[in-house]
Length: 293
Image (cartoon, rainbow, N blue to C red):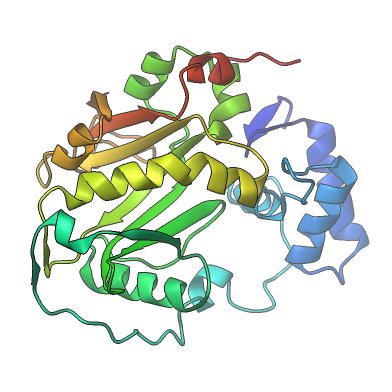
């Protein structure tokens, strides 16, 4: 390798690749997690609250191996994504018809569902009722579950990492490639939104979306040490009309092309999706288009 390559937001030189190879060769007893952590520590690769970016480092190492630039130590146990959920037991819940008005359900409470009983119930609902299902989450994320005044779950949401690049969004923001690579973490994606099939409550979806957006920046800062300034979501044109997002004042900025980043020969077809955005602050462009200090 003679040129700089960029992986996981880092510019890697030939010297960086050589350093990783030296660590692998010089410490055959290290497992992949130890290798990843040592690289983070050596490069001072940390997030906004000072934690080692171990997941980003592990992803970087896997991508380097896939490119044939190095050989990682053999796995000592199945990967986390393969083993997570292996012993998951669905949570029993009331799925009787709920056909009423939004007013009758108030006050609706939005609960963070990242751990404990709420997380198990959230996962049960996503696995059983969301058309995409759910296996596991990777990287930074926050999940919510909305409950009625009598404790019944009526909605679930998941927010996580934004798409690396998409032309309509990037044009709307107006940032350069370097600005995007530097500030993409300030954009987050509404990856899942579920209203269970037994719930028939007009205006509930837009109401829950608005509740989540009012607290999202604060919750993200508490968990990860910085605030997002823009939220995106992708809606399949053939399946949904985006009505609740429009009602919650999201803006449609364009559509995807129906291709994936693996579609090198223009043969793969995926559903075309409308791209909706919601700014969490007025000066979001100032933050996203910030240059290197």
